[in-house]
Structures are given as C-alpha cells and as structure tokens.
Amino acid sequence: MHLKELKTCNIYLLLAATTCFLAAVAHLLVILGGPEWYRAFGAGEEMAVMAEQGLWYPTLLTLAISALLMTWGLYALSAAGFVLKLPWPRLALVIITLVFLGRAAMGPLLVVTPVTDPHLMELQQRPMFLVFSSTTCLVIGLLFLLGLYQRWPALVSTRH
Image (cartoon, rainbow, N blue to C red; front, side, top):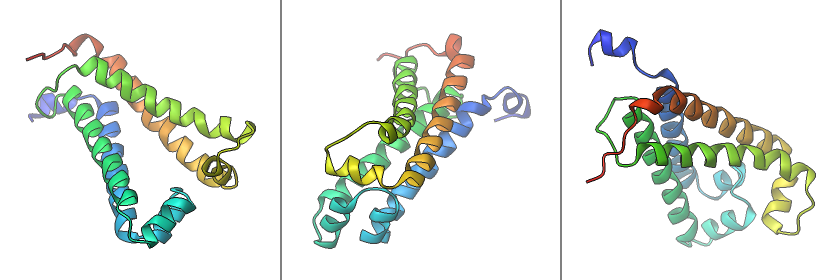
C-alpha cells in the first residue's frame, strides 16, 4: 500500500477489523485457558462444566465464534481495500453491523427484562460483564456502521 492509499484508507473499517481479530484471539485464549476462562469470559457455568468434563462442545462452539469473528475482520479489511474483494460486501457488512449492535442492545435489555433461562439468569448476575461486553459490541458495531456509511458507494458485489 502506498502512502497516498494509506491516507485515504477507511480508519473505521481498519479498527473494526482489528477489534474483530482481537476478539477472535481472545476466544482462542479462552479455549487454552480452560474452564476458569470460560467462566471469567461469560460463557456460563454450563460451558465451563462441559469443558471440565472434556466435552468437545465448548471448544467447537468457541472455535466457530473465533472463525466467524476472523471472517468479519476480513470483510472489514476487504471493504477498506486492504485485502481481496469478498462477495456481497454490502450485505455482509450490514448483517455484521446489525449483529454487533443487536448484541450491544442485549446487555441493557437483559438487565431490565425478567428471564427464566438459566444462562440468561446467570448473565443477569454479572452486570459488569454485561456492561463490558455490550459496550465492546457497541463500539465495534459503530465502527462497522461508520465505515460502511463511508464506503457504501464503493462497495459493489463481486458475484462469481
């Protein structure tokens, strides 16, 4: 990338990609950290117990989340012009943005909404985790939104 291109890059999408990659790595570290890390990072007691029992489900689910976050980071880099163009950039970025903003809204809603699901009840008892994770998702969602807004005209589908 030349200096002129660097000056015109979309900083919002670059930051969105970086945060997605960091979140993906954090999920991989949870797998390595084991049951206590599942607990500390909000996966819930059920996931931590399954990890203690050596079941594959927590690992596979966490790997899937990490892979999804990596893919979303690649879409942000692609839309910012840093990597090859990926298919359906507008649709993908709209969906990614909505997922992050929806997850951001879930925290405050969970605090005020009565729930019966044991996992959600467990989350309600961890308001600091809800605040941190919801705020993180809000920031990432806004980065995607701002980047998408700026790059919308340039994002054309690359159907094959």
